[in-house]
Amino acid sequence: MKKIFEVKGGDFDKAGETSTEVKTLLKDLGLDSGIVRRAGVVTFEAEMNVVMYADRAQVTFILTDKDIAIEVRDQGPGIPDIEMAMQEGFSTATDEMREMGFGFGMGLPNIKKNSDHFTLESEVGKGTRLYSVIRLDSDAAPDTRV
Amino acid sequence: MKLSDIRDLLHCATLSGEELLNLEVETAVASDGMSEVLARPHPGALMITGLTNVQSVRTAVVADIPAILYVRGKRPNDKTIELARDKKIILLATKEGMFDACGLLRDRGLKGGM
Image (cartoon, rainbow over all chains, first blue to last red; front, side, top):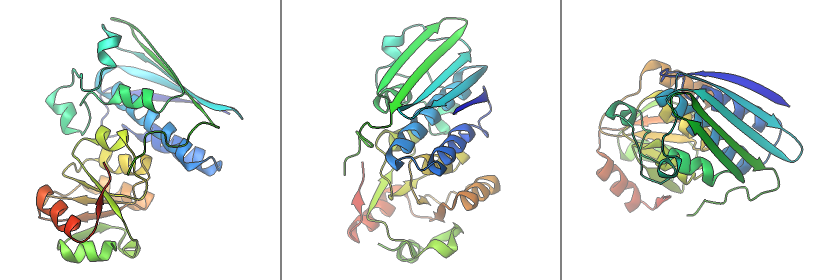
């Protein structure tokens, strides 16, 4: 199954719509709830990054019998230092973004943590491509602790 | 702890999910940062937050959180409440601050989830 969504930068009201839709879709297909949650977190965080930083993005989902692949290709300012951007707590967010409950330097690490395979490529001034794969037979909730 | 007991304890207004207040929660997560909540999802937990925008409800949907308790007398807008009703997320609102709300709930046996 393949689905493509468009996400618009700066549209805070609609931010999260794609992930909510994807989550409902995967849940309806009867996939494990932990796997669905991981896919939801990856998509939601990626979507928030697009809304906060990019002009627009195309989000592509491919579900096979082995895994879920999520690709987010945006047109935007790009990330000058990917290594730094991946550090938990590092953020270039504005106060306005933080007031939305995001922009605390957790997004990209959250995406990586919930992915079995993760790549991030970026070109300054052009955009960023994020690619995440979640295997359907992987641990449903690797980071849950009580 | 039943959500109806939480409503009574903290004198909450119920903004969504009145018919679901029989639900019991054992754990809670408290944060105004949604990525903090998403970093360690706790399915079935109560989310306590002062963040009232639509992303609070979307975070609950993504993280399998059935109920949100808004603190400091803050209320979400109608659009946010509408989304919560649609997604069957229970919304409670109290005038208590975050610290006091958490303390009172912990005293009654609710456990921390993050």
